[in-house]
Image 1 (cartoon, helix red, strand yellow):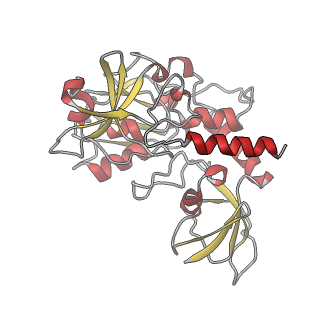
Image 2: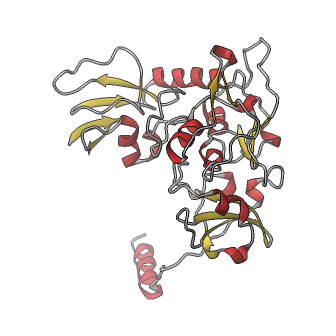
Image 3: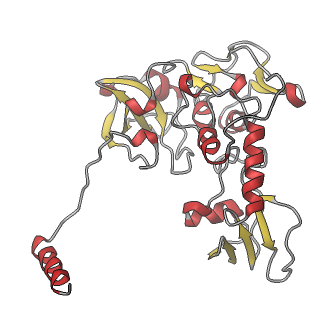
Length: 326
């Protein structure tokens, strides 16, 4: 085990844990943002640089600070390490610069983007972005690509996080797409149109942190905050069958995997569950999906509060004691 201090909070974590995952064990504001890292995809991380932190003390044995900011997703903790995230002005300034670079070519089309309300870049833009862009050059643009029967690629929005390529490498038998060209011409693409047809390709949509990969069966159907997310499951021979149904009235508009509080899928689901089972009769409904209260999706959503018992007599006595004490 190694003791590490992040933003003044000391914790003990297993050796080999990254700074980012150490912060996630505690949670809260000390957790750096991450656009490319995905704990369930091997090799991910180190692309977007939004998770940069300052190591003001390398370890107890070598207390010298690291000379530059380091990506927390790929830097392992050392015993006695001291890390600064939101308590460092250098980190906050660097993060503003990273967000500005990410938004250089990314179009601000949130009003028409299906990812609005669930977009990590949108959240980062509000927290660290500038009110006006300083970029005066022409933005790079691409034609919308049809890369599969159920997936639409908007390359204009892509930030080259590589998550979708890792999904194809690690969940499917073969990968039909990848990054072609170099520099500002680099793009996610397939050499053959509509080449992506493997049975777990829909997970590319769920892992995409922006609106570059969209679900054709859901496109422009509704804003997510007008839908009602419900946990559901079914017996599926290909995957766990545990999903979230996004309903509007009695209609299921889309099906997605279940995500944790950091926006990562708990389990990957197959295309049959995602695209073909769009009737409530196909599923066993478990109940409303818990949505973080800070998310716009939580607006007008209500959850049943179970197992809450209030002792009225005890409560009245406590109130009376407080009043008597003045």
